[in-house]
Length: 98
Image 1: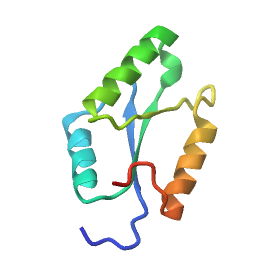
Image 2: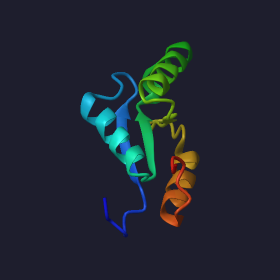
Image 3: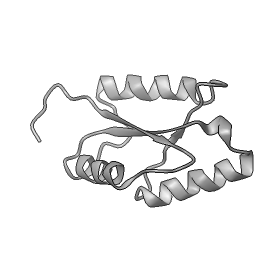
């Protein structure tokens, strides 16, 4: 993979359904090619706290330990963390560089 301008990839998944096969394959592809990426689990406001924690743990396990950032546009959960993570990707200090 020879994309010099690619600083990172943001993969968006619905926390309620988790990643589909294509999203898992993309994570594996990016990790294999040592490209930084960030997984954002949206709609975190739709689940109760216990269920959200359960889903977060399940997502992390399903994505080979890559921890998704929980986000909600409805109540701004994870907004500041997401901006920081984007800044890290753009600056070349991506969260999941290997």
